[in-house]
Length: 270
Length: 270
DNA sequence: GACGATCAACTGGTCTGACCAGTCGCCTGG
DNA sequence: CCAGGCGACTGGTCAGACCAGTTGATCGTC
Image (cartoon, rainbow over all chains, first blue to last red; front, side, top):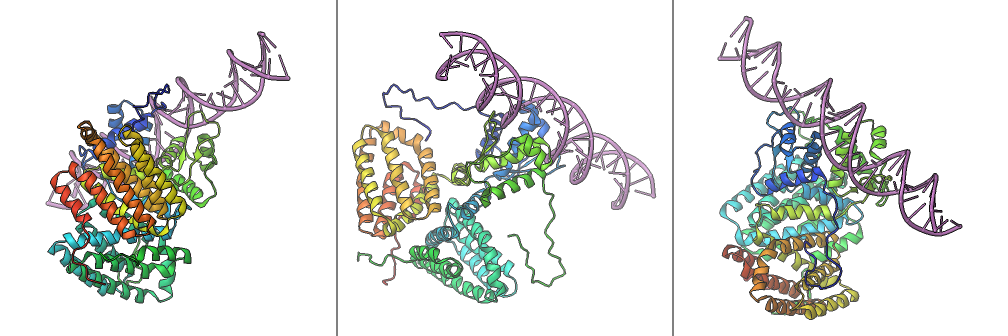
């Protein structure tokens, strides 16, 4: 909300409360602006801290605090001894997934919401991807499902990697980078959050069965994508996630997942 | 992905690459752990920097960099001169909103993607809200639509506020705080991004007509919610956004919006 | 006794200068 | 031509200092 209501002719002058802008904020903002504006593309390098100190005319601690903020936002990465200075990473979904992970771990929102949200995003990715995919996308997805099937029982880590890549390709095929990034962030957050629970299940020997089911789900979804049936792919995606995660959730969250799962029962004809 | 595949019996030992853990990271992690773990509830205070310096046995700059990271994550807030030390804020959705806003503003994704994404999130909010809303929600939504109708031509700012609140109530009624946060962040990003374009249209006198259409759309959506028809509400929501924003977008982005708009034409019966 | 100004003891924000451990690039000796 | 070493950097950290602002008690006044 950048503007107060300028129309209101009240006596209360609509000055915004002036809060002092810290020096490190100004520095961080300037750099961030350049990165977001494309003037500092990913892969390019920032000057060294001592040089920045001269350019901004502030102390090194101020420069360092600004760089810390940018680094914690995932915009840059710095490494000691690097004579080229900090590396510009550009906008990445990592911050998003970290924030999502924190939210999911907090009382504000739980794992159930996270997975429900993933159901929504994945389903919409499928719906769009079914419409917009290329032949190349389908080939790559087929490869990935085959790889999942091959790695299935022995290599859970590789399996998870291929699974993640499958979703990333789908999200990319949806043609919406924002959707893709969010879907990835949520995916990562779910993986990170539920890992501790899943290792127990895996230890109990359910892992192989879960992976087999997952491969089957992915094949069905891939078929739907191939047939350009977005609604079917979306429905299958929701069901797959529900089947996969519902057993590991408390009953309340299961109801939530079911709510996201069910297509509208009383849809009026037409 | 914190774990390498432990099962693979290859010669490659699965050591994780050792990267030095900076002192400020350890400090930030310890504090963050306490905050997320509830040991430092929102509203409580951290010791002063000089005291922290003693407790962690590091220099003040290290403490300050750690606090900067925590502050940029929205976990704490500090104010100069405060004898009580930094205030613990707890997990807040602001980080998420900022991250989303950055993504939306970056060159990675344009306005079209942003609005398409909003179509998806809003539609899913409607779908869930139609199922889960309370009588209170409906009453509040009715109030808001009436207020929009009342403010319609004269007070664009108030209108926009009521409109935003409408969507927030819907998102909250969806029962998924995560979805609500993202929807709000995207909504804000859209408003911020398109404002400069809309003021021109408003100056051209289209504002009143646009607002009248918007009120009608909201009434229809509200009716669908009242009838618990999630699919209809979702479809109406998509259409409303499409009609509202498509005229202001370049043709390429219009096609994108249409892709998100159309229900699947060849849906199999059943 | 209530009240407002004053002041000292803080706070966080910033600067300076220094040291360390690592990294890179050059340069040299084989 | 290459291995090794030697600076000249880098970022990470520390120590100490100063400033402006806040706070709360103290003190003089009414």
